[in-house]
Length: 187
Image 1: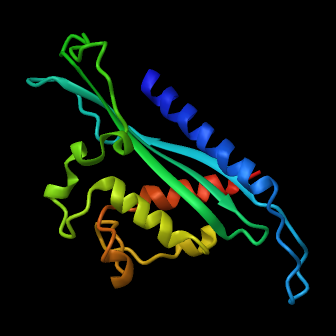
Image 2 (image 1 turned 90 degrees about the vertical axis):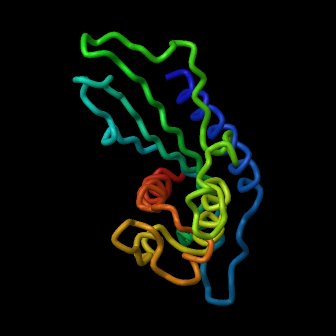
């Protein structure tokens, strides 16, 4: 719980920086007659407990997977900047409900873990989670949340478009969902 709060506080600081950068940046009216507007920043967290398991012959697992995004969008709703992080909090417990994971366990986010996360071993493109998250964030720049929602995915939830699949092979369903939510929260 403390780690999730830490992640949220870190992203709030990122949002503050993005907001501060955007506050002085007015868009000038274009030749198309559109009005000037300011950048807006949105933040969102989505969480799932779908990977949790009951205790039985083996220990039970309470697992919370949280994906976090901060986005800045322009007056037309196009993403101008985006950052992601995620954390997998795993708490094991016995059949009688006792927590067996040490209570002082430090849970690091995937951005904090970098190469220690270990995705590179399973990556067909030789990229770690944080590198793929950064590549997806770069790819969505200039797109609206609606356009991001329309990104073609394969059955596993990874990008199906060759251009994107060359730099991102992780499942992006949660990235897309958290972008939608953060864009709606943009102020």
